[in-house]
Image 1 (spheres, helix red, strand yellow):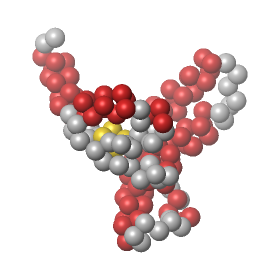
Image 2: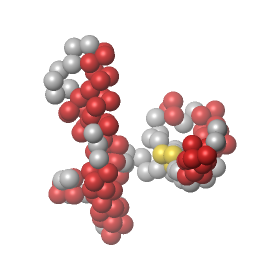
Image 3: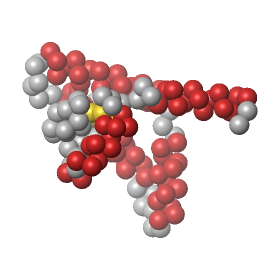
Image 4: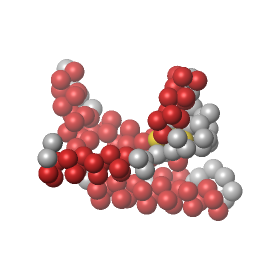
Length: 133
């Protein structure tokens, strides 16, 4: 590889070295072999049950994939009631590629509000109002 392409790949690799990985505490995700592999790969950048950073149990209200992405994608993917696997796959690709940076910025703003509330309330359950996007 030469030129810009190699440079872009190198930059992407460097950026990945700063990424954190988060997963829930499902048993298959927290098997010793799985956690050992993730720790070896990610070091301290693992948020998981039995990982270096423990993610609070039953915290789907703090996980953007849970409180936003899955419901949003599912509602649009199934809107036209796909009847074949190909149609379903096409819908998933279309819906996920249509998510724009502005929407993700709103999700992160909402996530920050959730963290602020949890911090200020010392872990109290969140009111419904914070769930509005």
